[in-house]
Length: 519
Image (cartoon, rainbow, N blue to C red; front, side):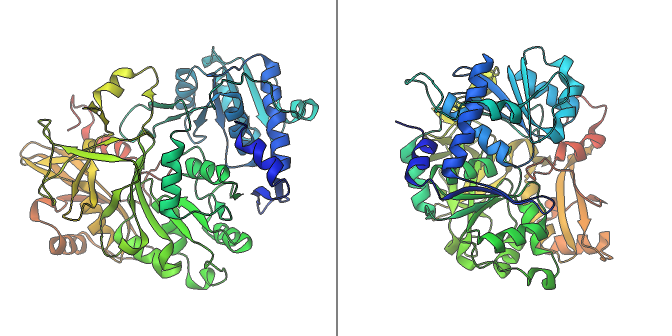
């Protein structure tokens, strides 16, 4: 079958495919026909280089742009495995991901070309570095110039080649990044069932909320393109500019971690009132849990029926969906299993947990057509996370009596204090419910007496005079005594990955320095 982009270029050639609207430069946009031409040109450049064939790994790096959309489509047409690289990584981290992935080609935004200049001698497998949207440094090639001279005809590829896969490196919140390899786009039947369950339309207009190198924003944008929707790109997230784009293009859907939405909802009312938000129809909440307080803030600013929450991961895809009608009825839940997904909970002894309620937690395992293929060159880690044909990423959950799933926490973040299991997400949710707390991170710190003690790092809202005594009084109302933070510290902001997840290992590290064990 022809690639969907090729098909849309023929069936809806004049419909807008992608819009890149930056405040500091001229608006760029491509129809489906124009996008297909650019994609074919890049695909033919890659073929002519002699460095790609089906299965080849290709790293891409840069903020959201038409260049990234072009590359993603070219990789799919060629059967190349695209490897997103977080442009916020340090030189050593970027070198590790690029080299570990066995990439032979790097495709990088000119803004970040110097990163690859600095690490070039650490990338012995890379034969070609293509720089787009700007001037290429010496020893690198200009993708723009090569594409200007390339054929716009469909690339000649084997008819039996599989569509390109992806390999997204996990964010590293708990350790060294692992390459989650997907060798195909997944089950079309499952994808269609999920889209129908959420209620997407071919006329939806998707806006990016966060970087496309993250599996959520990137995956949902890819879905929007596969449906023939229009995609609006925001290069880097800014809350006021995001509202401008929603208003200007009447954006109807997006995917967001909690941090960007918190920034939007915390804008002054007079700023928010300048922009029409009523077009938003499908807001997918994920990447990290949205607190109940944040959900209520969102619902005060956006259409009530627009909020969906999904639970999933880079490795396992979308596993649960909490629909709009359940957002306030089921606080703390991530919903019921999504179409064609089976979920089982297992205790530490390997027994299936069948009971309901928070007193019956278990590690959540998933069986579905959307589970990834393997951890690249780390198959032992892949098999270690399997049980009876089900896969896990180490999350702890329980069910209620209606079958709704509640994620307690990641297994690796669990605190054991005096023999009691404590789940930080529960405490963080209570802390964020305090009107003077902007956000919080909770983790275990060493204690000779208790094994671990609960520690909280808190970011106050601007102008707040919140004290430790205030926090203690608030938590005592909402938490059992053993869950109350025994110590806390204040911070101006919390360290996060590019996708908005809090890097607890950076906060936890100083407390455990010099110890053989971190728990």
